[in-house]
Image (cartoon, rainbow, N blue to C red):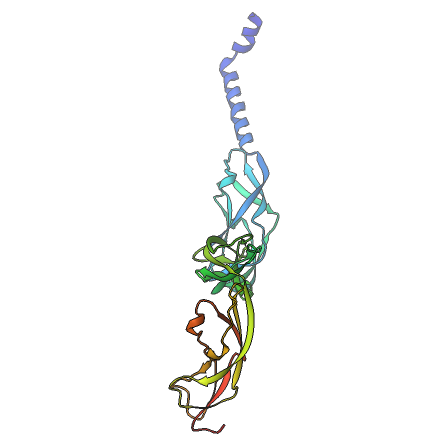
Length: 313
C-alpha cells in the first residue's frame, strides 16, 4: 500500500500536469479524425417556370460521399440537392451537381464525391385543353331493355400536361359503369380515368353519368320528300328531292307508321347571298302522333345543296 501511495503521490503536481496534457492531446487528435459516409440526398427543384414540365425520368436522389471531422454534427435528413431551374427552356438541359447545390451542409462537413455529377432533364411546354368525357359502359341490361342516351355532367373537363401528351388526348374516360341486368334509368357519380399519370385534371376528378335504360327498339327506313321550309321563297332548287331516314320505335309499338306525315325541310339564312349554292342540313320534325315514340337516328345524305334565286342552277 505504501508503495502504491508513493507511486501516485510522489511528484503529484507534475504527474497531474502530464495527465492533463495527455487528455488535451487526445481531444485534439480525436477532433481531427475524418469520418466518411455515403448519404442519399434528395433532389429539390427551385424556381421551376409555371409553363414548363419535366418529361423524362431522372433520379430523385443522388448518393454523395460526405466527409466530416469527428467533432462536426450532421443531420442527414436535413440535406437536399437544390437545382435552380429559373433559366429552363423547352428541350434538353444537362445541369452539373456540385457541393454548392447541397443545402444545409454544416461547417466541418464537405462533399467528397458524387455518384452522379450531371443531371439530364427534358422540358416541354405545359398545355391546357378542354376534352369531352366518354363514360365506360360495361354489361348488358335486362332482357327486353337497352341502353339509350347517355348524358354526362359536366360533359367536358379541363386537362393539363406536357404538349406531346395533351396533343394525343381526344377524350377523358371514366371508371367502368356496370349496367348488367338494369331495367331502369339511373345516375352514377364516377371518377375520371386517364391512362397517363402525367396528364392532370384541373377542376374536378369525377362526373355524374345519367344512363337511360329503355325498352328495346327496332329500326325502320323509308324515303321522304325534301321541301323548302315555310317562308323560304329564296330557294330555287334542291339537288335531292328525297332523303332516306332511319327511325327507331319501341318493340312493343305495333301500330303502322304513316310515312306520308313526314317531310324534310331546308332553310337558308339572311347571310347566304342570292345566286349562291349552299349546303344545308335538312330538318325533320316528328309528327305529333309519334312524339315520344319515334326517334330519328340518321339522315342520308346528311346535307343537301340548295341554289338561291338570282343565280344559275
